[in-house]
Length: 530
Image (cartoon, rainbow, N blue to C red; front, side, top):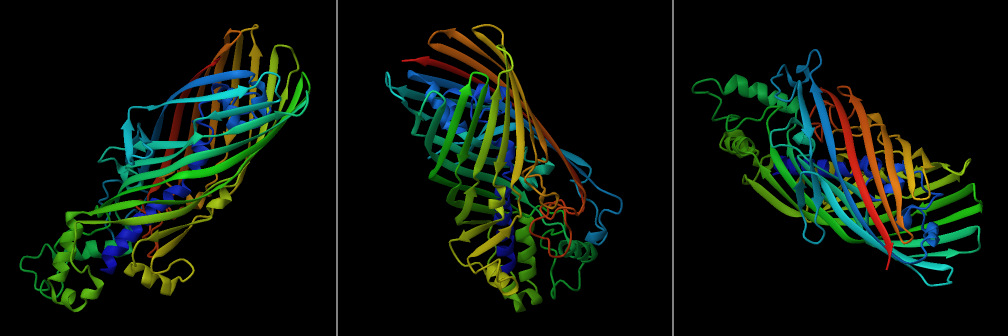
């Protein structure tokens, strides 16, 4: 029972590790809000006006929305995620000489987009990301107060790989999504120079993962060598004593597939900000976006491979398997189903920025930002029943395990970053925009993986704004994000370590791994009075 459940613990531990990979948060942060102006200016927007999306970027700027206004938003995009797995010289030495790894010297590509359907559950595969969003604001005539609400996605990352893609051991399908469906906001214009604002966001948080599992390492290498020696012998004399030939269990064997779906329907946050505009050529703004403590709940399904089942059935049929049946599965199942929960924190964020107009037609924005990814220092998974493997684990590591839970150390780092944007006013109606935002990774080099394949990234923005008439504005924005990372063999124990205690979870043990991510996002808004 222990070994079978051990695999289950590995599988779910790997699933939780993806949340650490929310470097997405760096990858997807402010990438899917749907504000064309912010996108075009490289998200250097804290001291500027971003329409209804000021609910997120700086609610104080909502005072710019006069009368009653509504905004329709359309956002679309796609991601190209690639990885290369190269075998260095001497590959296989840690697997007792076995080196027939089908993943070695291969490449992976995830191109399809994935979305999560709140309330329904599960991920949906799409050719590209597609999301219609909307918001509205009301400023009573002569009032200094503006009310607003907005629908937006502060976090949206989803991709899918083919069934035989070598990257499937760290995500065949993955969706991490945060949808703010209601955001009551209020902004108050203190005087001609100063505005303050507050928004409350009610969000749905979801994670869905489908992933294959394998366990290259010293122990599976030993099993594979033993099978090569014993299972090719006709009439193996040791079969009655120790039968290892029921199914393949080497370092490169597909062991199982896990499908996990967790969500929380109500996750509140708050944003508070100010905007100071003492002159026409200078403005200063700041916003603080609170963290959100969450407890995601859901279901997991683990399907075991025929090789895995056959190996334990063969072992149980032998004398040693019968004597030590407490160390082997008590009944070999092809599937396990259960409940799992995960405590996690959506990290707090702070941004401050300046807006300068050195010329009537030119405007320069500059932002300085901080995100508290140190909140992802560890994650705790809780199961709906006692697991034998955790009962044993707590004896050796009482600080990291109980009979019903496991704590996963992540060690992520809070990061500072900056962004710059430029706008050129062609005439009274047309504005041209461009921006740049370098995004340092929150993931230390020894925590890198393919599940969250993001190192340091660069984001580039382009866009236009057009005043259609006195009541109508159309904005178009485009973002291009690119990131590369290099993970040498045995440098990260989230992906390619091969020591005897690194079975959870290093599916690309001893391989050199390189990743590249490209994201393309396009957003269009139509804002008018009603």
